[in-house]
Image (tube, helix red, strand yellow):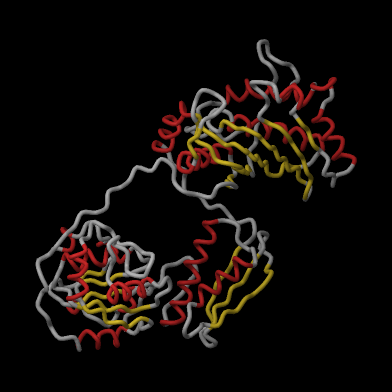
Length: 486
């Protein structure tokens, strides 16, 4: 018979509770913790127990059962959030069509699982539909009432689908946002985004490019005079010191068509646009006109090498100078990290002139690209290095989650980023629904979360809190749930 550890390497066996391979029963707990539905069931009463989060998991369920034909019953229990259980029932009722699609549905099963094997499953395996049930004692009663049956055939193991080589992963088409404290970490994130999601297209240079449209990079805390130089950067402090004069002085080096320093400080009859920004904000701290423009329309539209920086704008808020730069075109491998340090240098000069602190720097790169000749170098950086694990606080605040067991409520205290308590929300456990879904939907609709990591963490915490309240488990925010013995 089948050895689960040896013969099921592709069926996520590490995520299964393994029992007796001679049993007739497999337990599918959908979105409910498998540990909850098997709590009062000895492992000698089932072969495996696992979840079925999405329709794709039906393929793994089929493979598992077909590889061990002793399984004659699948107990479908737990909460069916994504309706994957409903899709399994549809398969049992209607089968598949000639395209391996579940009849009448849009979901297609893996073609590596033959139609004849799927029919064997449908004819010989009974789905015991207990969706909505999480009581392990009731599930155990269903197991005991199911008569013992012989295996329905020989074990069958089928190849997995081939992994297609994907040059560009699917993504949003515009508006990519990176928020980091330091330039080096932001650059690593930029390389990762473009190499995964950048569209391959031609450029006005000889090289092809990978391009993202409107990549926004926010640098919150970088001192350009004492920069954090990570080992994956292709340049060091010496290169920075050589670069700064190109933007902080108006002199054009010999053989150079322009520099940003020249366009900002001396271009157009010697006007110093950075001084204009400083003077404008000194006179009117709330001004929205502190702008510098590097683009000379008549000249640059005809140029083969026009400036990439187009507009700089400085704003003052909370006694800090914020700087935003719009770049029409940005070589994100060779140019962006130097650009970011250079812009931070300009921002520091403006801030010190106004005797204010620096706020974040924001670059908006309309065409954020990496040229083909740098692809292998970018890939090597991503393969050799990884960003260190770090806590990035959500600027929109934090949440403290507690339980009111007497009232069967989840309490959510919302604190602003400066730890002032702003609100307390109470959520009553819904006997038929999933309360944690309504909680995170409300939090999202209120716009109180700005980071994916924060949103993911909150989703997990709300689900844990609900499970703890429903099943009498101990709950402590940021700690794992503990399943107590009866």
